[in-house]
Amino acid sequence: MARIALFPGSFDPFTNGHLDTVVRASQLFDEVVIAAMTNTAKKALFAPDEKVTLIEAATAHLDNVRVVAQANGLTIDLAHKLDAHFIVRGLRNANDLAYESDIARVNQSLDASIETVFLLASSQYLAVSSSMIKEVAQFGGDVSTLVPMNVAQALQAKFAEAQHD
Ligand code: ADP
Image (tube, rainbow, N blue to C red; front, side):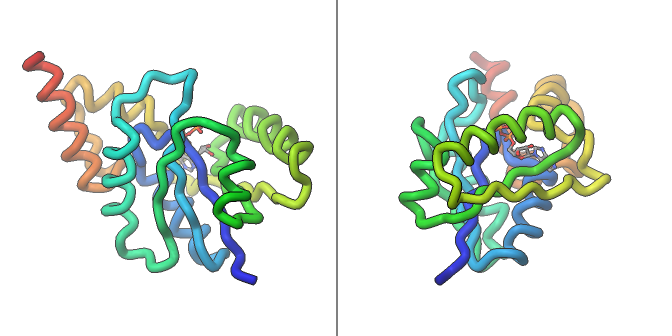
């Protein structure tokens, strides 16, 4: 049976920290499905289809990785649909651990057969978050070392477009 892992997130936008987690997960599992989720608590800069296109291009070199969009619903239901028995999440710090372990416990109570696997963020990406990237890019700061090239270009286009509105 193929070991399929689901990597859910807002990915608004997808960063090099996310990519690092995906690369490492792709070495641990037969298949990794990245799900660009719509986080109802956060207002998104990128539409779901834009996120999918960006993540697909940024992970095109990884044979066993694919990308889906998920508008709403439970992560655990998506895992069932995809036949994924693992949920991958990244941990940067103690805040992530507190937040992520609560979610993992809830998911565990919903379906104990689905295991959440945490990958520790690599040290060079510890300070990288989507919100920090948006903050910096919005004011014209250079984020090209922190996000994939296509994401840096998309951010530039997005904020140039906003200035003309
Ligand atoms: P969410 O809104 O679901 O937290 P994010 O897109 O912010 O979605 O993050 C998705 C996952 O990636 C989370 O598990 C988060 O902890 C992890 N993550 C975020 N930034 C990094 C990073 N720099 N390095 C490793 N993992 C990260």
